Length: 130
Image (cartoon, rainbow, N blue to C red; front, side, top):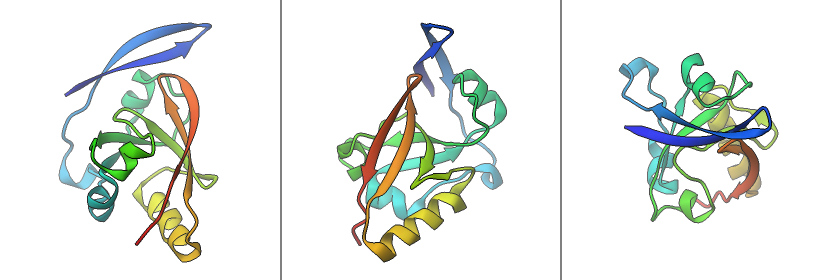
């Protein structure tokens, strides 16, 4: 599917189309337990996807899907968002997110997310309720 993304670059907004497709199974990163709980699916981006989104960072997880009835949607996450950091940890892969998730569950504190949406930096908190 194709996602339209607005980015802010060189002092102006640009609209880009990003094609999101299936990868081979060894390249797919999904949060199976988290998908059901939070209603979102995250994927690791390749260089081409990061470039098409206008990202200068070489890390981050793309919100590939966000169910409107899920907790992630309720807390403000949307399809096309890029999660750069969780609790100040750069997210390079699923393991990074899972580490933050496990630590947050131990402390019962929410996960603070640094997100890029349409070229803007935003912050959201995602509670961790078991």
